[in-house]
Length: 98
Image 1: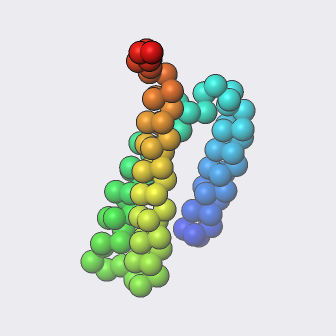
Image 2 (image 1 turned 30 degrees about the vertical axis):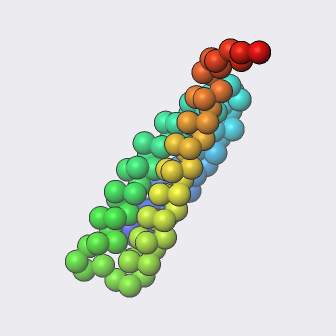
Image 3 (image 1 turned 60 degrees about the vertical axis):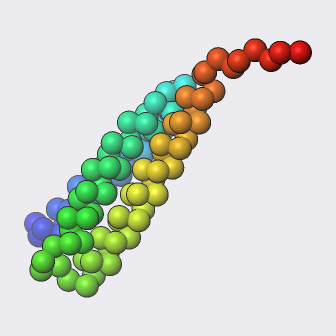
């Protein structure tokens, strides 16, 4: 089996397992689960930066690395904004003086 075939096989397996696991999560747990995926996105940003900045990277690798950096950073920032918004929903509001 060639390297790219193995990589494709691992990607397809991870995509299928990820889809099945997320699909079966209770709606009450979606937001905490999303908060956890922010850590994974942070790791993806670091990995994409390392790949993009490699000394012997091809133009295709640099382009795909740049797309990965942008996509992961967008996912990371959006996840933290949504988590912050969710946490604000649980804060007690100050009583209104009338």
